[in-house]
Image 1 (cartoon, rainbow, N blue to C red):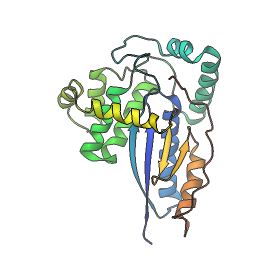
Image 2 (image 1 turned 90 degrees about the vertical axis):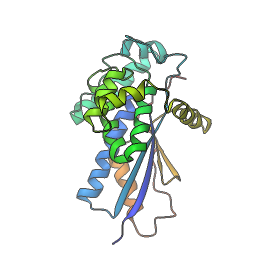
Image 3 (image 1 turned 45 degrees about the vertical axis):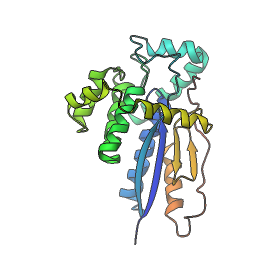
Image 4 (image 1 turned 60 degrees about the vertical axis):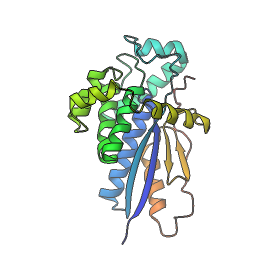
Length: 243
């Protein structure tokens, strides 16, 4: 049986906890569908950048801003408390220590590095690097606007050498391209992420559970499904929006 190729374009931001949750859930769903259900599907992933936090609010070179304090001020204490409780519940259930400790970082440099990884090696390089950046920022509280931090991640994932990564990050390469991608997403009405676009036709918004994605992929694997939309659900949790 031939496999159907499912193209997944994921618009995401490293500053977004729900994006990290959605990333884990999506990869778990793909692994389950391939390894356990053995669905006749192949997946092509591409991650595109988004900035939830405008650079006028969080400049590129902001340093030392406590993540919790920053979010409480810009989305409100009540909303932040609800978000933190939802993320903590998920983290405890999954055994993945996502938290809001560490500093608040603008994500442009990290996005540039991920786009460079995709140029070099497609999803085979971009996905492992994206996983490493999310882990560094959401689990370890590292500053992903720091060139040294990102260069170390690039080297550890085999994206490029540390020296090459530093040279890239200190240049202007892909700055305009990443800015244009972020602007284009907003021009199309996207105000919150994650947003997963399937085969360029259907969009799934919010940090969905792996079960939601599994049901979608099962639908796509069924005979005659190529022209019918899968049963998409709405977002399962609130997304941090800072305009």
